[in-house]
Image (cartoon, rainbow, N blue to C red; front, side, top):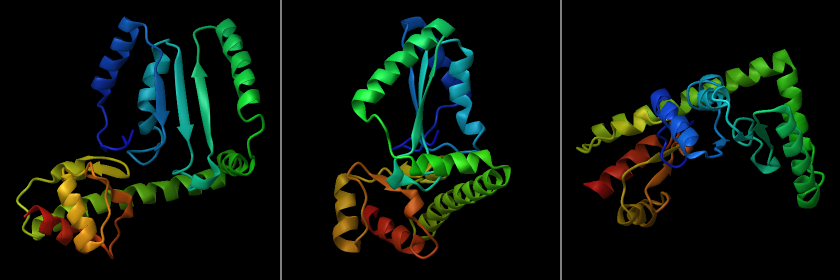
Length: 218
């Protein structure tokens, strides 16, 4: 969900096709879910994971809590591995223990303890889910606001795709030269590929960014 850098997610039907390709080619999928909760909801954003799990495949799932818990500096996450048998699960677990021991042995516990405490408490979890939903709605509002302000600034190009995307990022369609102008002329920074961080927009800078973008593409 909330694909980085494009902001474009596969539909349920497209994910089903991916599962069939994985089966046909005997692949082992590795799913990275770093933005769960920023797309539609915590449950809806895990739909692809559940689809692969139901397909009775061996699956690796990497989860990150850096963004959803605002713990970016703590590097909190989890690696979940789905296997097709208890015996295989035991073998995988034994190998994971060896890798962990030689890699980092004992990771810092502070960030993980924070996440565990929140998820274990019905009250704290409800508050977290509410706040996560508020952040999700705010980012959506910034997407919509950017599109509307670009129209108001006289931009003829269709930017409706920005509103349709999900998550923190968007491929804006800006060229490297236009990105350079944003930086040099307006002090607005973006990646040379045109990727922008929608989450960095707010009600105070939305007009400034929209007008600057309008200036460099006209």
